[in-house]
Length: 231
Ligand SMILES: O=C(CO)[C@@H](O)[C@H](O)COP(=O)(O)O
Ligand SMILES: [Fe+2]
Image 1: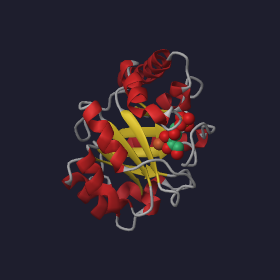
Image 2 (image 1 turned 90 degrees about the vertical axis):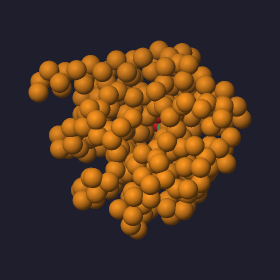
Image 3 (image 1 turned 30 degrees about the vertical axis):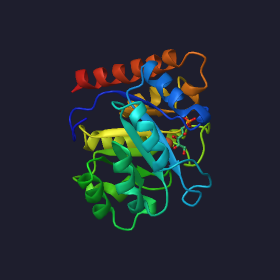
């Protein structure tokens, strides 16, 4: 994935609610079901009231799937602390939350210098204007459509104004959405202009994940095609 090219549809399952005792198997299942990348949720028990895993797990996972794109969703305080470890573990994208960061441009540069794509995440209460001064420094904006911390929550439709604003003003930006996205909500995020779709329970809890991934992709690709025709 290159910086600010025409965005295409990418579906990234979150494995947060999968069976983490067989993580590699669950990840492989997602890729074999048609996923474009894996969204790995890192939680530290401080930035969010939940705990998951860190770079040692990512490092173990990497050799088992050398070509898979790992999108690290860093729901942690002091996100600058883990950049080198995550790069060393084999992460491809490092998405930090601006609410947890004191120096956004410095952290963006640090991530880029370590060879990862730069993602900036916004909690539902954080206005999109917060990141506008740094638009040259990031590759992806992650719009949270739930309060970060847990899978299986309800989608917040009022976050779509942020997605619409970004798509209008940054037509070539990768816009990622995360939280409560599945067959019932995908058309709304696709219409708004998101192109990187994180979906957790809707995919990992489905009897046929490939069917759900195909449905999500279909909705986003149709919306992209429609918007191109309208230009
Ligand atoms: O970052 C988070 C939650 O904080 C997400 O990645 C969720 O894990 C997505 O799960 P669903 O809302 O799709 O079930
Ligand atoms: Fe996430």
